[in-house]
Image (tube, rainbow, N blue to C red):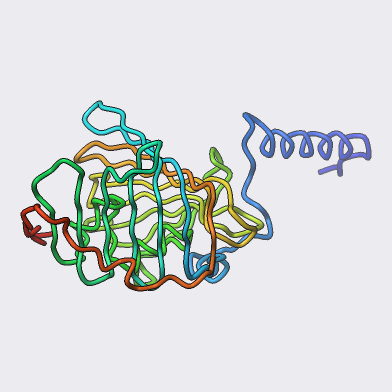
Amino acid sequence: MASAGPEVIKAINAAAIALAMLGCCGGGQLVEPPDGPRSAAELIAKVVRPQTTTLQGTGRLVAYTDGERRSATVLVVAARPKSMQIQALTPTLDLIAVVSSDGERFLSYERGSDKCWVGKACPRNLARILPLPLPSEGLVAALLGDLPLLPAPVDQQRLSWDGEKSLYRLQLGAVTALHQQVFVQPKDWRIVGAIWFFGDQRLASLHYDGELTPLGPPRIISVKTVTPKADLTLELRDVQLGAPVDPAVFAVACPDGTVQAELPCEDK
């Protein structure tokens, strides 16, 4: 068979370049970075984890639950490994409600109620702070931008490229049990979000947006849950990072005149 002439080869090369450009840029999507990780383990090793130890500051919390919108100025304090507190305040900075945990005990109180809820710092109770399927250490880490990855054996770790989002998708865990999808940005290897499932049922999702410092916590944390249906966004504003936090801050007592009620820990 006769070999192709120079003009034919030139035309084929031009067509290949055009196809490559369509694959790269068509529909506003990016192809998988050619120098990116080729396995889940390689991506996990690259993930950048903010090392902030404490966070103290104010922010704005907006929550939609049962079709009702609520918003409040909040005071947020978090300290590794597992202490966390959120106070909801009026515009004049009077206390509306508080949820607090020292990693062992949990407390929740809303102004005007005759009950003060207490219990162990189990995931079911801690979901009143952030509704994510995480233990106390994981919840504090998530608030600081260091989202925990679900432990999974190598054969339950899968890596793919999400062309629509231009993000790596890391899938962890057995699809018949609790499993997690984690989304990672190329180049800076920051986690920007995650979704938790149990079997084929979606449980909750988390999304990070913006940064307080180049390697610090995110400025905005958004969480959505399916059952019960909730959508909340915490925007941190005036924040101090890394300063010592007195453990007594998290040793909150029920207000005088309230009845202390125990919250159970039958996690499902």
